[in-house]
Image 1 (cartoon, rainbow, N blue to C red):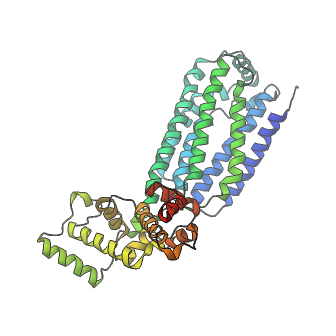
Image 2 (image 1 turned 90 degrees about the vertical axis):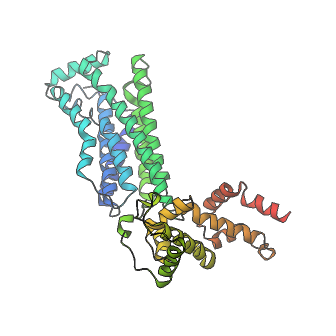
Image 3 (image 1 turned 180 degrees about the vertical axis):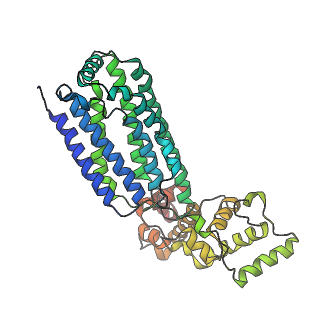
Length: 401
């Protein structure tokens, strides 16, 4: 038996061991169990794939032919697992549903279609391996193989689209996103898409017989690096969450002041307070919407709740005796802003106002930003430049000059 191990094989083996250990840690992790278990399954599939790569490239097919093809269906599983992990990680309240099984219909079909190969005898598997080595690919595999790339790229796009939508959801719920960010998931989705792109290049290289790229060496190496990165970054990320507005849909008991404001507007407008097309989601009436907008702007000016760096949409809605759902619709329909943009516009204006005051000259800009409710320097700089077109330091010099 000829058995060879080089540094690349060792890289795969170490990656497989780390993936196996990481899967165990993720299963035991208590926070957001659905997401962690999905990531654990993904790590387990990576582990099997890397071990199988060593199996092929180290010359173990002939002495142990019965393991041939064991990892073949796994690429069809990678995409669904990354997507479902992103969905579960971005919503800690979501569990697995029956419909999620539909994501694994194609991998199951691949297993069924290739079942005759798994049932081959050892000598027949060796013969098939030899055929594949010289480029003689059976028609069945030629038909099935391209679907893994279609699946991989489709799920990469679906994952990125979901995360983009979720970013909007976060901005409708939080005024500070430093601990509620999607960078980790965006990085993972981008890395997965990059590996699929590399896999296509590898397939092309196989066709033109480039030995450096043959048999997916770079793809396996990329997967091993991804496992290392997940081991380093995955467990260090803050839980990505958002409030579930379904918990807040019940109408709170309105204060007497709130009832008075709404009633006064209804009398002045001489119109029944019925839901309009703009507020179909919450059933918010026109009079209530305008009264809520007025109460919101009054609260922001008098009490400055934006100075709380952890202010959320439910927090502000509670202070207004309304529901987050209704407040969100007023922000979107009446003010054309997300909650995040609305609150941070007040924070920026607070900083700008204080920068213009002579008594604030001895204070650095970061101190003013933290007083205004910003939670980090990076977020402050980003939001300030987006709203003013200048960096905070450049704006201060302009005001001083």
